Length: 494
Image (cartoon, rainbow, N blue to C red; front, top):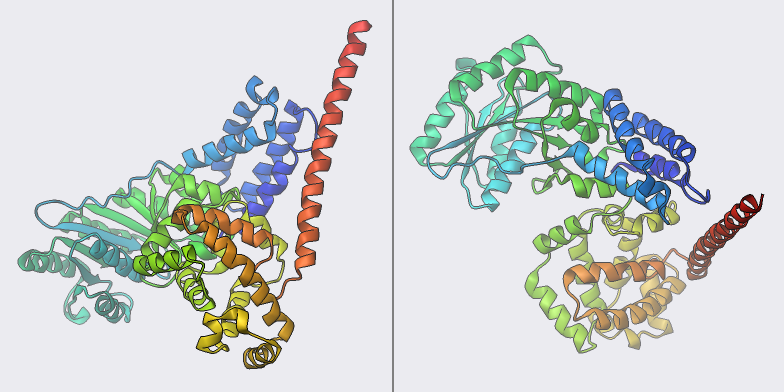
């Protein structure tokens, strides 16, 4: 997510580092690169101009120019302005305490509207509501059947009529009437889409709006279409006065233009984001967390919330007890890996942990998901006795495990050594909260643990080189400050 803009902004911010004293000239040069990065990310031109102007005005202030770490302050200003650009956000769906609440979903064909209706219904069910889906998309032949399948998957009522004998306005009106008769509190209208914004589509939606009077009108936009998503959001808002936007396919969007432009251009907040095809992949949109991801700062809060939702609490408590007793085994580790996989791809999980983004980049072409699969493959090739007693695995057992999992014996040997080290660390982490454990994961990654394809010596060299670079930069800055003081003294003497 947002890989391109992360890299571009990273290069732009490097203009502020290692230059000694920050000047207005440095700042304006760096902000030109920030401007270029945002334009390449497909952010609306007017939004970019206004954003860069606001950041520059704050960055050239006395407080930044005279601070000890002006580069960090500038990044902080950019973060703050990104949050302001995308927020504030109200995630509520205006569900009434009494009566039936109606949510009208609209959007262009191909935006993922029907699937998003199912995701929203699932979310409402988890919050204790009983939603009904209304199949009012009579344009796309498979839309009604698709919504019925989704309804079955989440255990939700679906109201539909014969397309040949009805029209969308009538379907919506009758669907709401049926929901009231059944005592259902929330109705989600899956309205028709088109391949592009046209008068016929807007007229139909306006008729539904005036006939049913929905409590919320939400637009579903495909984030990967960039400025097209922003333009369609503006057109829909002009016609309907939207209450919010749901951005879909955000996990595949490397640019980020739609997420950064929608609120500024339309005034309509992004309420939710779709980050996968599964019906549980609908998340609340948090501008501060998204700004952190865009700037490569991670998003530990969202990761922690996901973990709380997906992890089995009793299993975690059992594992914690085992760790405290020093009985953490490869079988327990395999269970933990399977739990982690529920959170999403390893690459995305690692990027959500502050500081891990650089490690992902350092891994180059190494696929974390594949490497995790290789580790699990080796554990699967062990007997139950071996998983419970890894210290009893001798050379002949290693060779058999390697042959069974299609790896070299040296990789099995590395796994066992890494696991022995990790088990000790896990024992030390056993009394930490789940949130604090995520922070400790970074330590393991820095050591190259449980990456059978990595050469630990190479990882150590990279870590030492990185630390050396930081030391060199600090020494360089120290020398520049001394030289600046000497120059001032010379100027006074003159």
